[in-house]
Length: 188
Image 1 (cartoon, one colour):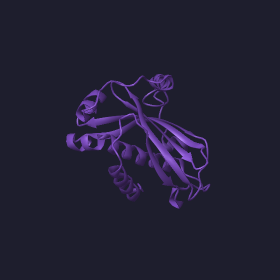
Image 2 (image 1 turned 180 degrees about the vertical axis):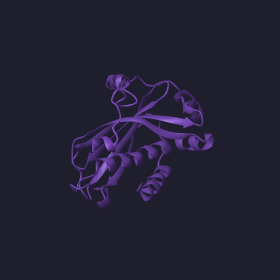
Image 3 (image 1 turned 90 degrees about the vertical axis):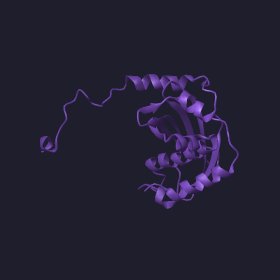
Image 4 (image 1 turned 120 degrees about the vertical axis):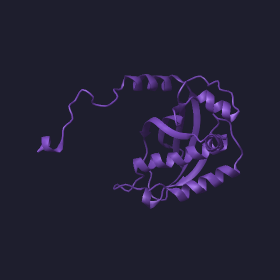
């Protein structure tokens, strides 16, 4: 289940914090709760992505995006991600989450987030390709930024993000398109 209580807390905290620029760092504090654990008693990888949602939404509130989404009746979606998990996190372990928009192109905004343990080690890092949507599809970042009253000029795209975009463009879609689908009766 989505952590709605945590979401409400994060939005209340973000509302009381000073606004930040689109590419500024949004930092939040969290704790791994027992229901965040997997069978190995560490933070579940899927739950980590859900917790990253909380950081992005708080960041969105502080940069003014959430108000624009409400006003324009736009939605927010993730169009891709790449995650690195490097350190385990266990029940009741405290961690810091860092979130920021890095750059954007003609369709997507690229957001990076990371979780940092109390000892200073980075536990995980994720790059997201995000999009704002309306009833017609993707709302371009320049249109979103104009609605936010921001400059639509993107910071330079780091090489590692450009390489990820290039690699993603080579990935087949739909997946396994050349492989005939197997049914349950075929496997029997």
